Image (cartoon, rainbow, N blue to C red; front, side):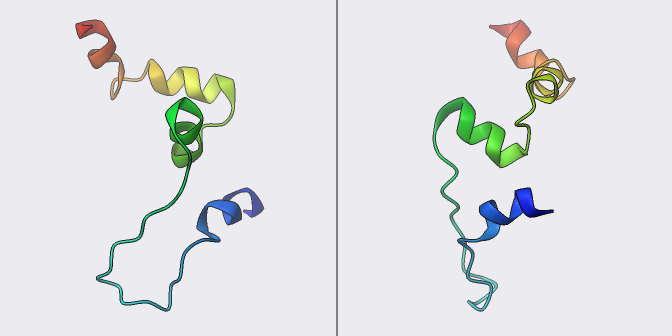
Length: 60
């Protein structure tokens, strides 16, 4: 659970629930991996080859 703490440490949960929250996860592949919690290379590759993402790669 501690690995997720860094992502959520920037949140101010005392604020109004209707106020959007922006997390600074970085840019590019590393930022996306961090946002999706896919820091393990095997998990990242499996996600890229999943039915959710793979159809977009096939179209390219």
